[in-house]
Length: 251
Ligand code: 13P
Image (cartoon, rainbow, N blue to C red; front, side, top):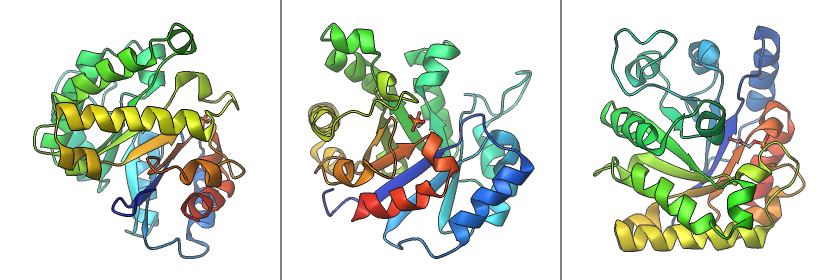
């Protein structure tokens, strides 16, 4: 990790949790102080966001896993960025591959959501990543650059409130982690893209996280890569391993 970028570890709980298991996660997150020089953000299902925000110390950020592009209105089942802010959470994950591929969210909609969330004062973890078929067809760059463009077009002057999460879809929940070299290679390409299409400053300052089967055993090697500025962790963020990952990645 480059020293000018603060290491960032996010835990995406996805659609997991009960009142009991949420309390267990809060307990292991607060058992001992986490390293002060790392940004840690957890993302519970929306129903638990206010509870988790109230229980965790302010030093740990809380993110919703999604939100809509409007403030309020007749959008049954949706939540707004303004509501997330209203209950005290600071972040939202947008563009996760499960939203893209299981719920059909388009690049365009994700871009609009990113713009609205930022304008509402939320910080955004914006996710991108290619399918296995796209990687095998040699289309990784084309796919992730297109996803980046739709996001970047809506960020405006809010880059300091954006973290990019590169999550190759073939590595999510499969136990098949990208090698540190594969992750580093794509992160460098993304930083180059930012340099060319946004600015040198944004390219240097924006955190690019890796996500996809990060665990306590592989975090250190991944985190040692110069352009891997942290992780977005799924399954392992539900277990005490998450604390090991936070510490290992930073070692
Ligand atoms: P896993 O860590 O379970 O592979 O999930 C990664 C992810 O999708 C985080 O957003």
